[in-house]
Length: 79
Image (cartoon, rainbow, N blue to C red; front, side, top):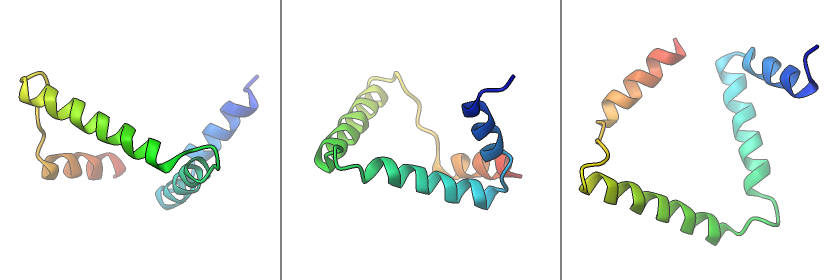
C-alpha cells in the first residue's frame, strides 16, 4: 500500500508543467520564509558552494557547460 508521502509525490508529479512549477515555488517559499531560516546564512552557504564549484573548475575537476546547452536540455526534458 502506498504511503501518504508517496501519494502526495505521485499526485504532484502528475500535475501539468505549470502546476508543478507553481507548487515548487510555493514549497520553496514555505521553506525560505520560515522564521528560523537566516537569509544571511543561506546567502553565505550559496557563496561557499559557488566558490567550491569555481575552485573545482579552476583545478580541472569540474567541466563548464554552456548555458545554451543546459537550457536546451531542460527544454527537451519538458517536452
